[in-house]
Length: 366
Image (tube, rainbow, N blue to C red):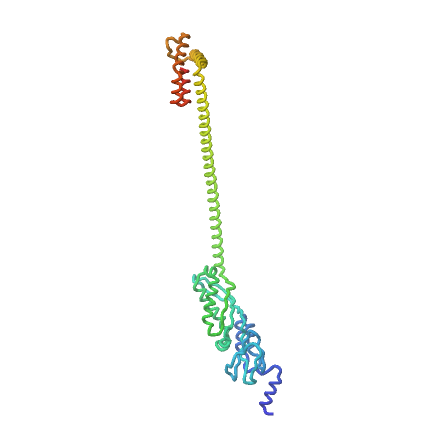
Protein backbone atom coordinates (compact mmCIF):
# COMPACT_ATOMS: atom_id res chain seq x y z
CA UNK A 1 0.00 0.00 0.00
CA UNK A 2 1.50 3.28 -1.09
CA UNK A 3 1.49 6.47 0.96
CA UNK A 4 -1.51 7.99 -0.83
CA UNK A 5 -3.64 4.92 -0.12
CA UNK A 6 -2.61 4.90 3.51
CA UNK A 7 -3.47 8.63 3.85
CA UNK A 8 -6.91 8.16 2.27
CA UNK A 9 -7.63 5.13 4.49
CA UNK A 10 -6.63 7.05 7.62
CA UNK A 11 -8.91 9.93 6.66
CA UNK A 12 -11.92 7.74 5.93
CA UNK A 13 -11.52 5.87 9.20
CA UNK A 14 -11.06 9.08 11.23
CA UNK A 15 -14.38 9.82 13.03
CA UNK A 16 -13.94 13.58 12.93
CA UNK A 17 -13.60 13.69 9.14
CA UNK A 18 -10.97 15.34 7.00
CA UNK A 19 -8.16 17.50 8.29
CA UNK A 20 -9.18 21.10 7.46
CA UNK A 21 -7.41 22.68 4.56
CA UNK A 22 -8.01 26.20 5.96
CA UNK A 23 -7.68 27.01 9.63
CA UNK A 24 -8.60 30.18 11.52
CA UNK A 25 -6.25 33.10 11.36
CA UNK A 26 -4.71 33.03 14.84
CA UNK A 27 -3.22 36.50 14.39
CA UNK A 28 -6.62 37.96 13.53
CA UNK A 29 -8.20 36.12 16.46
CA UNK A 30 -5.55 37.52 18.81
CA UNK A 31 -6.07 41.04 17.42
CA UNK A 32 -9.84 40.89 18.01
CA UNK A 33 -9.41 39.51 21.52
CA UNK A 34 -6.98 42.29 22.52
CA UNK A 35 -8.33 45.30 20.67
CA UNK A 36 -12.10 44.62 20.61
CA UNK A 37 -13.20 42.52 23.60
CA UNK A 38 -16.84 43.45 22.92
CA UNK A 39 -16.77 41.48 19.65
CA UNK A 40 -14.55 38.62 20.77
CA UNK A 41 -17.25 36.06 21.52
CA UNK A 42 -19.12 36.59 18.29
CA UNK A 43 -15.90 36.52 16.23
CA UNK A 44 -14.76 33.34 17.98
CA UNK A 45 -18.14 31.75 17.24
CA UNK A 46 -17.79 32.60 13.58
CA UNK A 47 -14.21 31.32 13.33
CA UNK A 48 -15.20 28.08 15.00
CA UNK A 49 -17.73 27.51 12.21
CA UNK A 50 -15.10 28.43 9.64
CA UNK A 51 -12.82 25.70 10.97
CA UNK A 52 -15.31 22.87 10.41
CA UNK A 53 -13.55 19.71 9.33
CA UNK A 54 -14.08 18.30 5.86
CA UNK A 55 -16.31 15.28 5.48
CA UNK A 56 -17.68 13.27 2.61
CA UNK A 57 -21.33 13.52 3.59
CA UNK A 58 -22.40 16.73 5.34
CA UNK A 59 -25.70 18.02 6.65
CA UNK A 60 -26.09 21.78 6.35
CA UNK A 61 -28.36 23.29 9.04
CA UNK A 62 -31.21 25.59 8.17
CA UNK A 63 -30.35 29.30 7.79
CA UNK A 64 -26.68 28.59 7.12
CA UNK A 65 -24.62 28.82 3.94
CA UNK A 66 -21.45 26.76 3.52
CA UNK A 67 -18.89 28.00 1.01
CA UNK A 68 -17.15 25.11 -0.78
CA UNK A 69 -13.78 25.50 -2.49
CA UNK A 70 -12.36 22.89 -4.81
CA UNK A 71 -8.62 22.88 -5.01
CA UNK A 72 -8.46 26.40 -3.60
CA UNK A 73 -11.09 27.98 -5.86
CA UNK A 74 -14.73 28.77 -5.14
CA UNK A 75 -16.94 25.93 -6.24
CA UNK A 76 -20.45 26.29 -4.83
CA UNK A 77 -22.64 27.18 -1.86
CA UNK A 78 -24.25 24.25 -0.11
CA UNK A 79 -27.99 24.39 0.50
CA UNK A 80 -29.52 23.26 3.81
CA UNK A 81 -29.85 19.49 4.00
CA UNK A 82 -27.81 16.57 2.72
CA UNK A 83 -24.72 17.35 0.61
CA UNK A 84 -21.84 15.22 -0.72
CA UNK A 85 -18.26 16.45 -1.01
CA UNK A 86 -15.33 15.03 -2.91
CA UNK A 87 -12.63 13.82 -0.60
CA UNK A 88 -9.38 15.79 -0.61
CA UNK A 89 -10.53 18.09 -3.43
CA UNK A 90 -13.46 19.87 -1.70
CA UNK A 91 -13.15 21.89 1.46
CA UNK A 92 -15.55 23.94 3.57
CA UNK A 93 -13.93 27.36 3.54
CA UNK A 94 -16.58 29.58 5.13
CA UNK A 95 -19.79 29.10 7.06
CA UNK A 96 -22.12 32.09 6.93
CA UNK A 97 -25.17 32.40 9.18
CA UNK A 98 -28.20 33.81 7.37
CA UNK A 99 -29.92 34.81 10.61
CA UNK A 100 -30.16 38.38 11.81
CA UNK A 101 -27.16 39.24 13.95
CA UNK A 102 -26.96 41.90 16.68
CA UNK A 103 -23.63 43.66 17.06
CA UNK A 104 -22.84 45.91 20.00
CA UNK A 105 -21.41 49.24 18.85
CA UNK A 106 -19.06 50.52 21.59
CA UNK A 107 -19.35 54.00 23.05
CA UNK A 108 -17.64 56.73 21.08
CA UNK A 109 -17.42 60.51 21.13
CA UNK A 110 -19.11 62.71 18.55
CA UNK A 111 -19.43 66.48 18.14
CA UNK A 112 -22.73 68.09 17.17
CA UNK A 113 -23.10 71.07 14.87
CA UNK A 114 -23.29 73.42 17.90
CA UNK A 115 -19.94 72.06 19.23
CA UNK A 116 -21.24 69.82 22.01
CA UNK A 117 -19.31 66.62 22.63
CA UNK A 118 -21.46 63.53 23.13
CA UNK A 119 -20.67 59.92 24.01
CA UNK A 120 -23.00 57.56 22.14
CA UNK A 121 -23.26 53.81 21.85
CA UNK A 122 -25.76 51.65 20.05
CA UNK A 123 -26.77 48.28 18.67
CA UNK A 124 -26.52 47.30 15.01
CA UNK A 125 -28.71 44.58 13.49
CA UNK A 126 -27.44 43.09 10.24
CA UNK A 127 -28.07 40.11 8.01
CA UNK A 128 -26.04 38.29 5.36
CA UNK A 129 -27.86 38.51 2.04
CA UNK A 130 -25.02 37.27 -0.19
CA UNK A 131 -22.78 34.59 1.36
CA UNK A 132 -20.29 34.80 -1.52
CA UNK A 133 -19.68 38.56 -1.06
CA UNK A 134 -19.61 38.17 2.72
CA UNK A 135 -16.87 35.53 2.36
CA UNK A 136 -14.73 37.06 -0.38
CA UNK A 137 -15.67 40.76 -0.34
CA UNK A 138 -14.18 41.64 3.03
CA UNK A 139 -11.79 39.93 5.40
CA UNK A 140 -13.83 40.49 8.56
CA UNK A 141 -17.41 41.62 7.84
CA UNK A 142 -18.39 42.22 11.46
CA UNK A 143 -15.34 44.32 12.24
CA UNK A 144 -15.70 46.28 9.01
CA UNK A 145 -19.35 47.10 9.51
CA UNK A 146 -18.73 48.03 13.16
CA UNK A 147 -16.12 50.57 12.12
CA UNK A 148 -18.43 51.81 9.39
CA UNK A 149 -21.26 52.26 11.88
CA UNK A 150 -19.04 54.31 14.19
CA UNK A 151 -17.81 56.64 11.47
CA UNK A 152 -21.30 57.01 10.01
CA UNK A 153 -22.76 57.85 13.42
CA UNK A 154 -20.12 60.55 14.00
CA UNK A 155 -20.80 61.97 10.56
CA UNK A 156 -24.58 62.10 10.99
CA UNK A 157 -24.40 63.63 14.46
CA UNK A 158 -22.10 66.36 13.17
CA UNK A 159 -24.90 67.53 10.86
CA UNK A 160 -27.43 68.34 13.60
CA UNK A 161 -27.46 70.26 16.88
CA UNK A 162 -27.90 68.93 20.39
CA UNK A 163 -31.64 69.51 20.57
CA UNK A 164 -32.18 67.66 17.29
CA UNK A 165 -30.25 64.64 18.60
CA UNK A 166 -32.95 64.06 21.23
CA UNK A 167 -35.87 65.27 19.15
CA UNK A 168 -34.98 63.48 15.89
CA UNK A 169 -33.52 60.30 17.32
CA UNK A 170 -35.56 58.05 15.03
CA UNK A 171 -34.57 60.04 11.95
CA UNK A 172 -30.93 59.79 13.02
CA UNK A 173 -31.19 56.00 13.25
CA UNK A 174 -32.72 55.83 9.77
CA UNK A 175 -29.98 58.04 8.31
CA UNK A 176 -27.27 55.81 9.82
CA UNK A 177 -28.91 52.67 8.41
CA UNK A 178 -29.12 54.18 4.92
CA UNK A 179 -25.47 55.25 4.99
CA UNK A 180 -24.31 51.81 6.17
CA UNK A 181 -26.31 50.00 3.48
CA UNK A 182 -24.76 52.14 0.74
CA UNK A 183 -21.25 51.14 1.83
CA UNK A 184 -21.90 47.51 2.83
CA UNK A 185 -23.67 46.46 -0.36
CA UNK A 186 -20.43 45.13 -1.82
CA UNK A 187 -19.84 43.07 1.32
CA UNK A 188 -23.07 41.08 0.98
CA UNK A 189 -24.45 42.51 4.23
CA UNK A 190 -27.69 44.39 4.87
CA UNK A 191 -28.16 46.62 7.89
CA UNK A 192 -31.67 45.94 9.14
CA UNK A 193 -31.78 48.70 11.75
CA UNK A 194 -29.63 50.71 14.09
CA UNK A 195 -30.69 51.82 17.56
CA UNK A 196 -28.95 54.47 19.64
CA UNK A 197 -28.82 53.03 23.14
CA UNK A 198 -27.25 55.62 25.44
CA UNK A 199 -26.35 59.27 25.01
CA UNK A 200 -23.99 60.70 27.63
CA UNK A 201 -23.55 64.45 27.94
CA UNK A 202 -20.79 66.41 29.70
CA UNK A 203 -21.58 67.41 33.28
CA UNK A 204 -21.75 71.14 32.49
CA UNK A 205 -24.09 70.56 29.59
CA UNK A 206 -26.34 68.43 31.79
CA UNK A 207 -26.44 71.19 34.43
CA UNK A 208 -27.27 73.80 31.79
CA UNK A 209 -30.02 71.60 30.35
CA UNK A 210 -31.40 71.00 33.85
CA UNK A 211 -31.50 74.75 34.50
CA UNK A 212 -33.19 75.26 31.15
CA UNK A 213 -35.79 72.63 31.97
CA UNK A 214 -36.48 74.18 35.37
CA UNK A 215 -36.80 77.65 33.83
CA UNK A 216 -39.16 76.29 31.19
CA UNK A 217 -41.29 74.61 33.85
CA UNK A 218 -41.41 77.80 35.93
CA UNK A 219 -42.43 79.71 32.81
CA UNK A 220 -45.19 77.20 32.08
CA UNK A 221 -46.36 77.38 35.69
CA UNK A 222 -46.50 81.20 35.54
CA UNK A 223 -48.36 81.08 32.24
CA UNK A 224 -50.83 78.54 33.58
CA UNK A 225 -51.36 80.61 36.72
CA UNK A 226 -51.97 83.79 34.70
CA UNK A 227 -54.33 81.93 32.40
CA UNK A 228 -56.19 80.62 35.42
CA UNK A 229 -56.54 84.13 36.87
CA UNK A 230 -57.68 85.46 33.50
CA UNK A 231 -60.23 82.68 33.13
CA UNK A 232 -61.49 83.34 36.67
CA UNK A 233 -61.88 87.06 35.99
CA UNK A 234 -63.63 86.33 32.71
CA UNK A 235 -65.98 83.96 34.46
CA UNK A 236 -66.75 86.56 37.15
CA UNK A 237 -67.36 89.23 34.50
CA UNK A 238 -69.56 86.87 32.51
CA UNK A 239 -71.50 86.08 35.66
CA UNK A 240 -72.03 89.76 36.45
CA UNK A 241 -73.03 90.43 32.85
CA UNK A 242 -75.59 87.63 32.84
CA UNK A 243 -76.85 88.72 36.26
CA UNK A 244 -77.40 92.27 35.04
CA UNK A 245 -79.06 91.07 31.87
CA UNK A 246 -81.39 88.84 33.83
CA UNK A 247 -82.11 91.66 36.31
CA UNK A 248 -82.90 94.11 33.50
CA UNK A 249 -85.08 91.54 31.78
CA UNK A 250 -86.89 90.89 35.06
CA UNK A 251 -87.37 94.65 35.59
CA UNK A 252 -88.63 94.98 32.03
CA UNK A 253 -91.07 92.15 32.49
CA UNK A 254 -92.19 93.72 35.76
CA UNK A 255 -92.85 97.05 34.04
CA UNK A 256 -94.63 95.29 31.19
CA UNK A 257 -96.78 93.37 33.62
CA UNK A 258 -97.55 96.54 35.58
CA UNK A 259 -98.44 98.36 32.38
CA UNK A 260 -100.63 95.49 31.31
CA UNK A 261 -102.26 95.51 34.74
CA UNK A 262 -102.87 99.26 34.62
CA UNK A 263 -104.21 98.98 31.10
CA UNK A 264 -106.51 96.18 32.14
CA UNK A 265 -107.62 98.12 35.22
CA UNK A 266 -108.24 101.24 33.14
CA UNK A 267 -110.20 99.20 30.64
CA UNK A 268 -112.29 97.65 33.36
CA UNK A 269 -112.88 101.06 34.97
CA UNK A 270 -113.87 102.49 31.61
CA UNK A 271 -116.24 99.62 30.99
CA UNK A 272 -117.72 100.07 34.47
CA UNK A 273 -118.11 103.80 33.96
CA UNK A 274 -119.58 103.21 30.54
CA UNK A 275 -122.11 100.81 31.98
CA UNK A 276 -122.87 103.21 34.85
CA UNK A 277 -123.37 106.11 32.47
CA UNK A 278 -125.54 103.95 30.27
CA UNK A 279 -127.66 102.94 33.27
CA UNK A 280 -127.89 106.57 34.43
CA UNK A 281 -128.91 107.63 30.95
CA UNK A 282 -131.57 104.98 30.83
CA UNK A 283 -132.84 106.09 34.24
CA UNK A 284 -132.94 109.75 33.24
CA UNK A 285 -135.30 108.97 30.40
CA UNK A 286 -138.05 108.20 32.96
CA UNK A 287 -139.82 110.87 35.06
CA UNK A 288 -138.99 109.21 38.40
CA UNK A 289 -135.33 109.03 37.48
CA UNK A 290 -135.24 112.65 36.41
CA UNK A 291 -136.80 113.88 39.66
CA UNK A 292 -134.43 111.75 41.73
CA UNK A 293 -131.45 113.07 39.80
CA UNK A 294 -132.64 116.65 40.30
CA UNK A 295 -132.93 116.14 44.02
CA UNK A 296 -129.48 114.51 44.18
CA UNK A 297 -127.85 117.34 42.25
CA UNK A 298 -129.47 119.96 44.43
CA UNK A 299 -128.22 118.22 47.56
CA UNK A 300 -124.70 117.89 46.19
CA UNK A 301 -124.71 121.52 45.06
CA UNK A 302 -125.72 122.77 48.49
CA UNK A 303 -123.27 120.36 50.19
CA UNK A 304 -120.41 121.66 48.09
CA UNK A 305 -121.11 125.28 49.10
CA UNK A 306 -121.34 124.24 52.74
CA UNK A 307 -117.78 122.89 52.63
CA UNK A 308 -116.31 126.11 51.28
CA UNK A 309 -116.28 127.74 54.70
CA UNK A 310 -114.13 124.99 56.24
CA UNK A 311 -110.94 126.18 54.46
CA UNK A 312 -109.14 129.50 54.67
CA UNK A 313 -109.04 130.02 50.92
CA UNK A 314 -110.39 133.16 49.27
CA UNK A 315 -113.11 132.38 46.73
CA UNK A 316 -115.14 134.52 44.34
CA UNK A 317 -118.82 133.53 44.43
CA UNK A 318 -121.92 134.82 42.75
CA UNK A 319 -124.14 137.35 44.51
CA UNK A 320 -126.89 134.83 45.17
CA UNK A 321 -124.64 132.37 46.99
CA UNK A 322 -126.48 132.96 50.22
CA UNK A 323 -129.92 132.29 48.75
CA UNK A 324 -130.44 128.56 49.10
CA UNK A 325 -133.66 128.46 47.11
CA UNK A 326 -132.17 130.32 44.21
CA UNK A 327 -129.07 128.16 44.24
CA UNK A 328 -131.22 125.05 44.17
CA UNK A 329 -133.21 126.46 41.26
CA UNK A 330 -130.00 127.19 39.36
CA UNK A 331 -128.73 123.69 39.98
CA UNK A 332 -131.95 122.17 38.77
CA UNK A 333 -131.92 124.37 35.68
CA UNK A 334 -128.39 123.24 34.86
CA UNK A 335 -129.39 119.64 35.37
CA UNK A 336 -132.41 119.95 33.12
CA UNK A 337 -130.30 121.50 30.42
CA UNK A 338 -127.68 118.77 30.62
CA UNK A 339 -130.10 115.92 31.01
CA UNK A 340 -132.04 116.45 27.80
CA UNK A 341 -132.45 113.13 26.03
CA UNK A 342 -131.13 114.39 22.71
CA UNK A 343 -128.04 115.94 24.35
CA UNK A 344 -127.25 112.82 26.33
CA UNK A 345 -127.45 110.64 23.20
CA UNK A 346 -125.20 113.01 21.24
CA UNK A 347 -122.59 113.12 23.98
CA UNK A 348 -122.69 109.36 24.38
CA UNK A 349 -122.10 108.94 20.67
CA UNK A 350 -119.40 111.61 20.23
CA UNK A 351 -117.41 111.43 23.45
CA UNK A 352 -115.70 108.68 25.32
CA UNK A 353 -117.85 107.43 28.20
CA UNK A 354 -115.05 107.94 30.72
CA UNK A 355 -114.34 111.47 29.48
CA UNK A 356 -118.06 112.28 29.45
CA UNK A 357 -118.45 111.03 32.99
CA UNK A 358 -115.44 113.08 34.11
CA UNK A 359 -116.90 116.21 32.51
CA UNK A 360 -120.18 115.58 34.28
CA UNK A 361 -118.41 115.26 37.64
CA UNK A 362 -116.45 118.45 37.00
CA UNK A 363 -119.68 120.29 36.20
CA UNK A 364 -121.29 118.99 39.36
CA UNK A 365 -118.34 120.10 41.46
CA UNK A 366 -118.56 123.58 40.01
